[in-house]
Image (cartoon, rainbow, N blue to C red; front, side):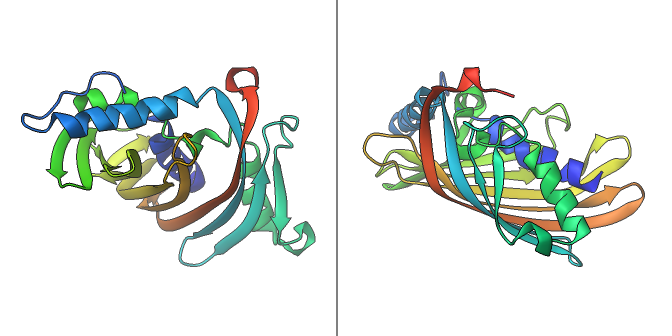
Amino acid sequence: MVRKVFLRAAAAVCVLFAAPALAETAGEPASAALLMQAAQKAKDFAQYRYAYTLDFWTSDGEKEISAKLRFDPRLQEGERWTLLAPAAEDLDKKTRKALKQMQKNDSGDEPILYDGLHEMIDDAELVSDTQTEAVFLAPVDEEDAPRDALEVYITLDKTAGYVSAIELKSKQPFKPAAVAKVNALNQIQRFSAPEEGGPALIATSETQVEGEAMFKSFASTTRQVFSEIERIEMPAEENDG
């Protein structure tokens, strides 16, 4: 249950964001327009699937799991994650179980783009603005949390015209399930600058979550580093699991 709660919270930020209307703050229409353009760029490339290498690390303060994996949507369902390191025979039982659960996610390339951003920025507010960077604040309306429990900070790199970071924060404790409670949640995803007219791609993600599940307290930190990202020239809708 602890892992299920964590995965829900971590996955929420990957599918919640992307660019139609966004109310422009008085006197600062340029930043709002740049945010919409950045979100639209990601949406334009959401039609593709992505292969990538993932360096994954997580710890609950007692047990650590560390692995390097490769995700490739061209492979058959259930086989799209390949363990690169360590060798499978060197994994203990708990680590094998955790990685096997992760490998069941056949749509593992969802976090590569922030292509859902347009679905949130209608309600985003500009909270800071400089010549090089603007930060927007948006509420999160998730089925696993009350509307006022979570908020998202969206950082726009105005010089290169892309979203450089998306940070999800809990404002108050919430219950994603009857037997679970999240007391604190923070996740920040950082994106690399676009290359050759393409979209910004995720570079790193770090999540910290504390709470209670099945009457036991838990706290975990997870870090992910994405590399060797390859756009697959086939429509995403043909391969959604």
